[in-house]
Amino acid sequence: MAAGTNTVNYRIVDVDGRNWFAKIYRGDLPRERAAIELTAFAGQGGVPVPDVRRTRTGALIDERMPMSLWEFVDGETAEGGITGDRWPAIGTVLGRLHRRLAEHPHATPALRPATEVRDVARSERSFDRLIASLHERDTPSPFQEWAREAAQERRALLHKAGAILADLPALTVQVLHGDLAAPNLMLRKDEVAAVIDFQPPRPGFIAWEIARIGCDPRTVLLGDQWIDGLRELLDAYRAEHPAVRPEDLRSAVAVGCAYTVGSTYPLAEPAPVSASLEAYARARHQAALHILQRLEDLSDASRR
Image (cartoon, rainbow, N blue to C red):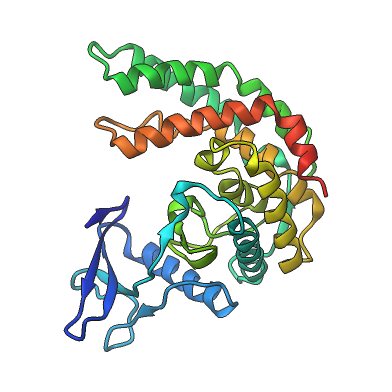
């Protein structure tokens, strides 16, 4: 069993020996149903997604549990970092995903100022509250002591995040996956086996979703191979989604950097913090600072 934010997930085996993935919900069912419907919409456009098994009455969620039942996808997540031929494979699927979701009736693609990626003034207030609360703790945990230092360091850099976004052109906003991080990308060898755990349809910046996976912290910390890898991802994305605006691809690294510098997640997570989440917090902080220091060179590398 693995616990998610809004679900408890199980791998189950039926009487015929077939594997399934069951999600037990503990949140807003209409929201969860909308996320399942978006998964199916993406799948109809050729995006590899797991099939959901409907109930005998045709419902996506059995509300008696409440539960949904999915095809079990055999593979591994991208949490170990992206390397080699996985880069273009992910770029192809991401381009196909965004090309398909641009057709979703919830929102027509539109241009929005890049400054809307991150409300820097709001981030300043969030960091100030977080730092104050961490200072007030009588016996902070080792993670909380580190989180306070990291928060102070990032708070001092927020003006740079604002300047980065102010220098960017207007960027495309459309319906996105919503949580396209490494744990939600299932890989089988060097191919994408499935994109999982969609969020309900809502518009967001495609440059941010590209950066979310292309600048994955664990990948960045593997070494500079990720810079050439990101180029391969963007080339494959463009080949699959030729209508994409070049500005969105060129701005991905800068958008991802500014957004992450201005984010308090997971520094603000309440105790106790799991070992895996603490490792991710440290990697995310280190990668954000690394990218910020090299942003000009990295942005040039994405302009092809």
